[in-house]
Length: 393
Image (cartoon, rainbow, N blue to C red; front, side, top):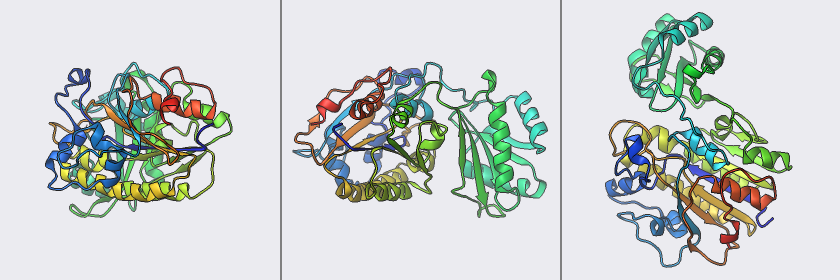
């Protein structure tokens, strides 16, 4: 075992340019990080810069450094799809051959809505693809007044239910979501996640979503590196929505986050703790707050906040720690629509014990991350992926 602790941080949706398959998904010349850089007046990311992000990918305001601190490459996705679960599951060794269903264009089928209304006792309003904040301004006053239930989707494979914490109630919202999860296990209705979207406020313009969101995700269809790590007696600590993405499978400790900044603060606190194994982090605000809302400036400023906390984390790493920074897909905020974009993602790796640095061979699959983790800890290797441990010297 070379590293006692591995921190894997997923900067949700921070893609670095189209791959060969991108046009098949309707994504042409997409580049989340590159296009954000082009839109920013200034872009201050000194810690990502030191790790080699600008050596890996051309950024308008950020020059490459002569001697990067870490190793880096671009990673290609082998699975079909461009959603959160596909990207994360592939990182941990699975290949998704059938993309999760999305109901972006049509809303959910009449039969599903009728069954949901019957089982929950609430009339459904909405049933369309919408921004989470816009649909509150449109329908939340009606929900509060009538007890109806806002159901909507997005560009992802998700069914989302809104509930006012004071009038609808958190427990009732969670109950309805559990029923929706059960119903959407049918093949023709199967979505990757059912998401509870609680909010507060009483009138348009004042509604705010809260941190009591909960994701009801499908369980991975096979064992992942997380399961192999847990079975091997190692810690598998999740931060953010990792626990939801894997439906708790293979997780030994879960730490929900209120924001991406909070997620980094939690990770820094974990770095100050003793454990042996994996700390797996998802930072969702990049995607949820800025990518889907097509706000490149907001996205860029969020990256700057991340970089500031990254600088703190780097000071906490021990000689036998490894840090990996990556993403699960793209979400180019300058592109048309509101969907994720099919892109390559970065692989940035750093340890204080590294003697070398620089570009390594690009990865054919995100599963190289899981294979690297499994190889390091001597647990069962996943079916897919190639360990990069020998390159990270």
